[in-house]
Image (cartoon, rainbow, N blue to C red; front, side, top):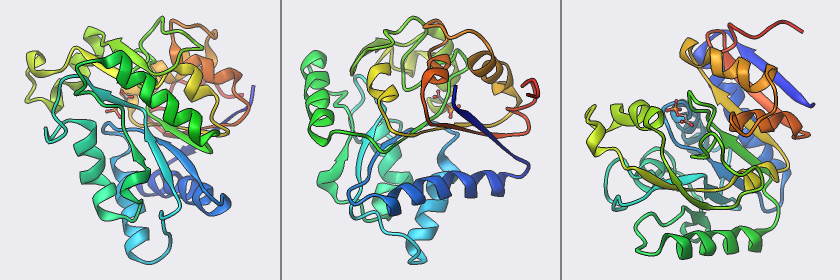
Length: 247
Ligand code: PGA
């Protein structure tokens, strides 16, 4: 197992560490390919990347990006579509060329075709240099819910009640407004990335962080599959790290 835990004691230090890893990947690769997450956790990381771009410290012009997932049935213009999230928090403010930005098409009337198209684009770029991930309270990564195929590719996933409840805060706390399905890159796609940065914050994530990284590797806890990956950094604050057993 090659998991490196990095526990930061201030939000600022945590944010700098996340942005540092992304920037390092961008600088180290001629044509960097990134997999990017949405959710509450990465928002400060994107803000810091935007700050560095505006300060002239980094350019994302050579980057190709793939987002992990997208809700099914939301228009791109919906404020909670991941297309909107990514443009609002990152793409509109930086220089990633529009043609290099990829998100699964959650509006497609034919989700299987949209997933196949996404897989074809992933195959075309070849290796992913860095996949940045959040983690759900049930251990999901992307929207790969417990039980997802460890070798799976981009597919349509039925969201668990727990996941929809966790995300209701973005939909006026109205569960009925939270989509029931999402298109997500599969675990097989994610695990093929050369490097993985997993982000988690807060005590509410402590139990699942311990289960994922100090419990058995099982498809019932999708994030636990990262234990078999050769190059993973788990970036935590003290709350999220609070239940880890010291090595
Ligand atoms: P969060 O979501 O960052 O909003 O907690 C993480 C996830 O569900 O992957």
